[in-house]
Length: 313
Image (cartoon, rainbow, N blue to C red; front, top):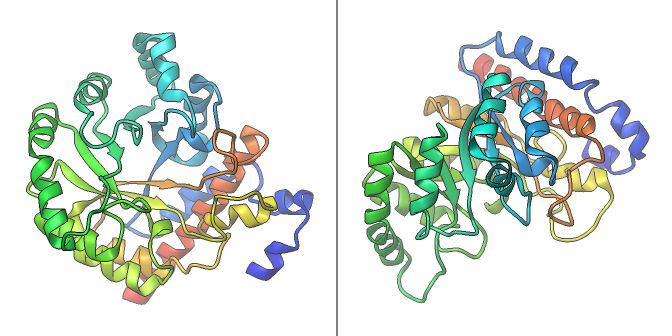
């Protein structure tokens, strides 16, 4: 199938991408009813480029999600937009759509400049901020992770008082990146308010090893990116190739990964995710097309859940 996708024309690809967003959402809900376990979806605003934040809110229900994650430049600018339009107007739009702000993504702030953002996220009803860790050094890996966790304690203390979780993504070239660093981090983290935003994209693309890592990290995983490496995201390529970052479009088998999430009874949110090239543009030309490919990926993940549940019987 992967080889076939590489040869699809854009028109033919969109014709097979899952129909309308509404129909896709209905299919997702139908698939979810087949098993007790379900992925709780969140909309990543960066998937829509720099689309107006109010318009992004309107898409949440159309992709079977319940809440939104706001990104700053360069991947999007919705986090900046809410400062420009006013937080009250943003909250009113959330209420009108029965949508929650769950988190903001702030790689631009890093792990040590989140104090003000935590207050804003908490005030707006959010529960999480995703960021990266810090640079690696030549010290032993476990020592580095231990030192990083220790350095986060004042920030975690504030997160605890505000009811916010700091989620560290295993981002490329950062300290918390490799499977071993994630295991050390999970073992050493002193608080449920300091967790892991797990991105399979940045891991070796072996489903069994990713599943084993999920089971090791367990409840330390507070956010999950449904995102595979595919052919990468740092150079221009035909759209069907770029979309191979999405589950069901690439070659990574998500059945063992989903099964591992089921085994740890993962209750956090999931973002169906990818990066376009260049950054800051929608992953597809129109909002409806963005919704269609996200829904197609969600339907694939629903089939993975059903297969995993059947195998466990």
